[in-house]
Image (cartoon, rainbow, N blue to C red; front, side, top):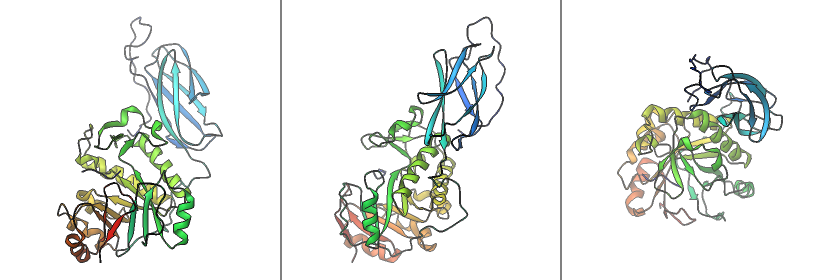
Length: 356
């Protein structure tokens, strides 16, 4: 819902001294590292582990499927090469198990049905100021009779048939997803490890994400972008991308947020999707070149609409919504700034009011 307002370096394992114990002193802290974080089915990758019981046989698996075996050395470490099974797809979890101890890493499987390989093309939709829009996240069904140039609807709940209907009516369609928070009802909720889940963001079932964990989060977000593309959407709205200004439970910095947001923008563009920057007003000057449009909530209510000027100056659309301010008060501001403004109910059902 709307905002309320590690990278692995492949290195050898460090030496440690055992003193007659069954396992090394650091065995409570098991970990594995991969020679690469993504690849295609059939690729060989090297798995390096440490902190396991010494001189003990173990296995490497994807889920419940064993893909390799190994034996730890006298310091509790191992190195083995395994192949990604040919039927693997999406984000998979590599699991190393030795005598009851285990460690995991995420691996992004690139298949021929996705467009995860960056393209030099810049041929994605680039919305300009003055377009009208409809924002409906409650439902389905989606009211496709609303007259608007752009529809913004939920990625998971809206199917390709609705997107096709809207396209046949001459609309562009944006898929909504939260990129900065975990939502416990989503179909991919189990893909988020507990270690990246922070405090509640104020909405039931939602928790902030540790956006510094790029090796964990980006494969999940890329899989979502793939879903968005496969359903025929033209662009994506990434919500909750201003965690560094909130109490997330993590020590997020301005740089952390810029890095994450830019990774999201690149991933969207690699798939030919436009991407909207949601709120995050403070970073607009740094991010306006990376994003294709902005989506804002309540800039009039908080006297913040001027912060959106860089998008308009770059000939990029700003889709703006107010919840409590009357149209007679915010529409003159919107007209002066060339914002595409509507008034909506907080639950974002089909109802809306437009500016005259």
